[in-house]
Amino acid sequence: MDFPISVPSIGLVDGKFVDEDPLLGTPGSLIPAQWGNAVTEEVLHVITEAGLTPAELDNTQLAVAIRLINKQPVLLTDTGVVNAYAAANSPALTAFPAKGFVQRIVITNSNTGPATYAPDGLAAKPIYGLGLQPLQGGELPAGVAILMYLVQAGVNGGSGAWIIIESLGGASQIAPATKSQHAVNLGQVSGIVGQVRSLKMSVTAASATATLTADEIVVETALGGLRYCLASFSKTINLATTGAGGMDTGTAPVSGFVSLYAIYNPTTATAALLACAQATSNGSIYSGANMPVGYTASALISSWPTNAGSQFVVGYQLDRKIYTDPFQVISSSTQQASLVSLSVALAAPINAKTVDLIQSGAVSSAGFAFFAAGDSTGISQRGYTVNSTGIQGVSVNDIPLITAQTIYYKIITSGSLTAFTLNVTSYTF
Image 1 (cartoon, one colour):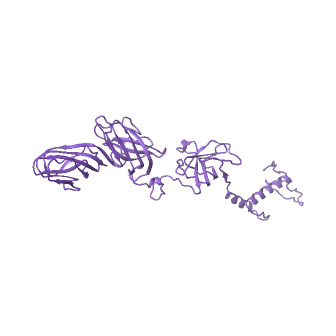
Image 2 (cartoon, one colour):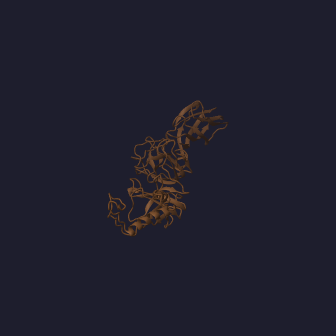
């Protein structure tokens, strides 16, 4: 109201207006014209603003008008720029409101990534989605958006943020699903744990450091747990340090193997590599006791050999196959007429699935046969038979390790076996 209100107290009975009673000689209540007209105009203004026609005998119109007006909220106009939104309220906010305060804004610039909102010249606060994470792009297209101010621990450090309650035509951010009937976000439905696309790692000289890249890596909080898809992954691992980007604890094994895990912190949207001895963890999910604080999801993405100096040996990885310099697993001149077991534990990690072999040998007379298999019965048996002497460098690939780090082989000649070596050249895990 734009006038002072003086409550007309003369002639009130129990706080209410009364009529004059000539029989009893009691006067009626006195109402100043300015006050009476002002109250009447205020009521009529609300009724007409709601689109109603004032009716003198209808005493419910004001309540109906208020309900209608509440269904027609004020729309503010975005006066900011891309990813930095602003608007003016009337009256203007002079301080940040209590949590739950809502703003309805006509967005003019679609966001391309993380965004902020600063009403009435107040400090800019980040805009988050319903998953309480920063925006990624496309959540605020041109159109109407509803933002709610939230102050909550764990959201922007507890210092306040604007949450998108609704954005017409925008991508909706939701929290990760935790039950079978929950809606899932895109990051939860991309493949299975450990699935990779175009993963590469190259070590050209023995070193404690290496860089691993991939177009995508899928990590999970547990087998069947929350799933995240890490895009454009490029991280460096240093076996001489501990924590994210290094060993989980202690030092790298000597002439052994390290398991490399992609790990992810969903609160900060931060990814890293973590190494550990294969005895600590070699499964699809990191199972050790030293996951860096805040990192809750992981996936095994490499099992790499180390040398006597606890460094990565020379090698190359493509997706889930690792190529190394040939590693000799046997040198013998003894024939084996039937399949016998042979450990490849020094050449392939405990979680290796298959190995590729190269065999070389020489015989003193014609007739030579070599076979390798996954077990003593000959599952996936592969090999060759020749009728010449001095056979060298023949490859036998994809021998399954049905028993961990163990293959089966036999070698037969029609004469004497003067030399026989077998080397592992690569393995899958």
